[in-house]
Image 1 (tube, helix red, strand yellow):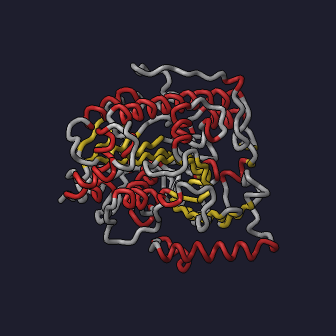
Image 2 (cartoon, rainbow, N blue to C red):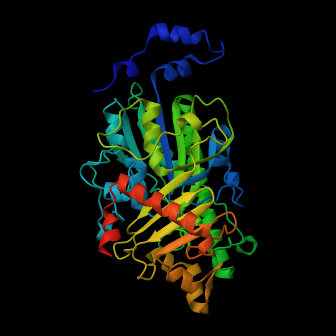
Image 3 (tube, rainbow, N blue to C red):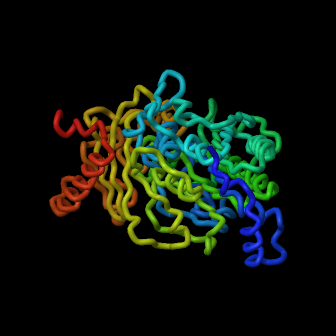
Length: 469
């Protein structure tokens, strides 16, 4: 049942608001602001911090502009570096060990959240919201994450057509507030490379010269890696164009100033040492938020936030009640105007699978300075996602018989110990495991205690590992 106070115009309130705004404020815009608190969530696919506004050598003018108009989080983290599981966290507010989405949803992987989960579109529907998912959905069961409508227009890579679908839907029922979820497929790898050879009407190609691409330190510096990254950057540019098309639709429909806009990615880049790992390139990601009521624009926030905080933020913005079960995250709406808010100094993560053959459960706690990774199946070699294994980057490592993958030895990358502890200030590349250093014993013990407490609080089924192994 929808809230009439959210949907019905209140003449007295409109009059009072009119006294507070400039005479030049459009009546349509004022009317919308008084009635609606809409939500637009834009999700990139396997996109790391490769944006101009994050200092990367990639041309992303639309997302850079969004950052100038809102808040760019410098310490934002997914809680699992895998597609379906991470999307389930965004939509449920629960870690994957709590929501049951242990791995990928599609094909033989067939993972699914618990039936008891009530996702974001379900919760907002109770407050009168209509919802549309355009592009990549990739979660299950649908009953837990049920949008009113779905569209695959544009196939997740043609942002122009995706935006057209969004525009048509926005005009259908303008009297109701909306949740618009745009699931881009870029820059995920395609059948060949990054699908840059496709035909995308309404989009333009922005190519990169591999000879001028410099691989990040965690990747090998060879021509195949540089070519791989050049293709990836082109796909990122297509994603940015898609975001621009959607923001234009929002502006043209008069909803730019009554809509909470969030851009984030599901997990790190599809390269070895990033996606499916808890190393920084896998879990430290872009998050850009633009809220109508922000007092400051162009904020760069040092608050440490994670994807469990997304759903509580949307619920707080829309004034919607949460589910009956507790949520581990909290709204960051109140700190959007702050550069360095107190009390935002730790995040946690939980990984079980990617593909169904890739069982490798991990838990992580990341503070300002340190990161502790608990590898619960450390006796197994670290598994490879099929798209990473088939990548030009990894095939080059195998062909050359490299003994290193960027800064790490190949052996350290494939065979990980039970405990990994890194001092991110002294070792940002996470190459020196300090878990056995007696001088760091107090730090290790503290992080292990905090991680165990968090596992208890979130009812982690893998707690059994402490007593059965």
